[in-house]
Amino acid sequence: MHDETESVATRLWRDRVQIREQERNDAQTRARIAEEKVAILMAENDRLAAENARLRALLNPDANRTRDETEQQMEALKGALLPLLSQGTGTLN
Image (cartoon, rainbow, N blue to C red; front, side, top):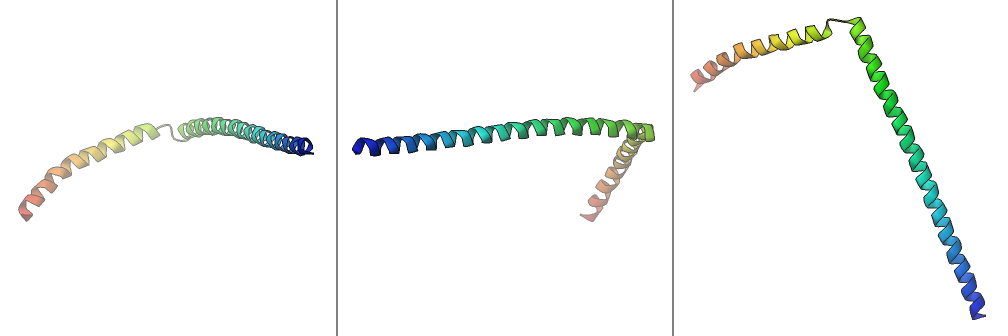
């Protein structure tokens, strides 16, 4: 009887191990599928970003030049205002 009880316990343990292994394998499969989907979505996102940039360039071909000019104007304004601000704080003290 002892051997039969041990045999049943061994089979139950083996079944439990197989169930856990199957659950692990299923989880790994789901994780791999999710990783593949993320890679596909990231590639699609990159493609759409490139398409958006292309369309923006067609819509406003001078956008980069305009942005550069604005940045230069902002730097010139900053350069003109900083000395004035320094003079203003000196007279307050």
